[in-house]
Image 1 (cartoon, rainbow, N blue to C red):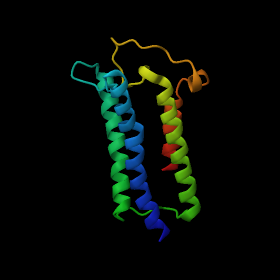
Image 2: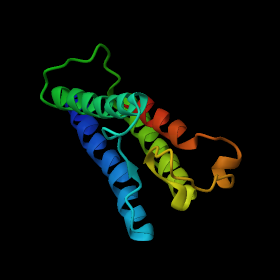
Image 3: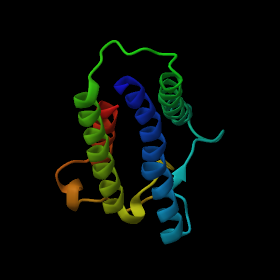
Image 4: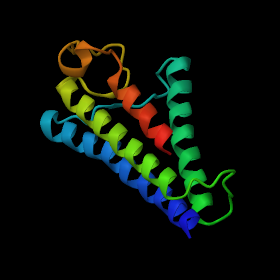
Length: 147
């Protein structure tokens, strides 16, 4: 019974975290600045920008695919962690999401996904960014460990 609950929780968690970390932040940025903050690679982008954009999309879709396949019972876990594993995983996902969203908030108007070489924004050095240059990535790493 716990395995089925874990699998369903993985898919539900993925959807919720994607909406919170990406969708919610894009909506806030649009409301604050009139711009979504998305700098998706285009044909005018450098080859490395296009490759990294496509790789990020691939990873997000791959994790979603795995969560869906597990939810359908088509993938079997190697280990059963039961309720302890579920609790630790959910705690890590919630902690990582909180850290990521707080870091995004602290970036203010400088937040964006992707790079536009012609766009210059203020370097954020306060809050979590005074201790780390990459607290958003660290939060996403914790989310990944939770899954």
